[in-house]
Image (tube, rainbow, N blue to C red; front, top):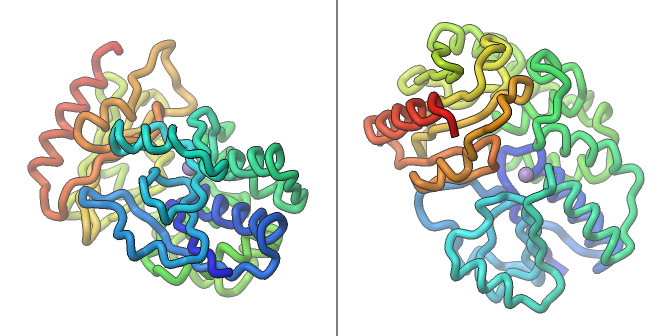
Length: 319
Ligand SMILES: [Mn+2]
């Protein structure tokens, strides 16, 4: 059986979700299943073309729902999992027993492991370390900013490699490794080291670039990286630089979009917090209460800068 698995691209939890789903599928549905992996990124334009569902079974993990009859399996934990009330109603009518949503889970990986254990009797103790780290990384449950920024754990090294990749063949190569080998062994693999080492050097340089562009006022860290050529960064760097910061608002761009990222400091929480997913939804974005993002068309710098300035002002006020 050919199984097409769509997963949240450039995301440790997305890749681990695809790995755990695949192990579950081989163990409980079809031992000879042949998997094809496709990463999905949040874009301003339409998400799915029906012809992409070309498997005998089609799955989406750690990504938005889509109301297609060709979608067989779905697991997500994002607050903004439904693009519209119609999509949510379509999900609510589903009677397949193969589509699952719970925004209380910190990671979709843990969600898949929990649901498949309860409903299908799937257990794979060798995946416990992977599931544990997916929950820490997607839930931002690090003990301190140094753990997240220094990257000593194998899962952190993999996260750096996964979040930075522009190579559509990399995660389809990595996901079967995640499904079958310990994290430390995967990191030591020459195919991973070759990607990790230059990224780690760039990570150290990105700390300097953010230090040069960022300011922190009234608890809001802001930096505009449009025009610097820097597409992404470790989202905990701002809090390592400004431990007093509560929120971060940043502007970055890649070939296909201009992006506002909005985050909150896991180690400096005031009693009441703004819901960042709700704020981002007002501008067509989404996310979790503690972290969100908005995508604009490539080149829409002024529109993105205007929205970022409004969000910075809003975050300086009490929720
Ligand atoms: Mn996730």
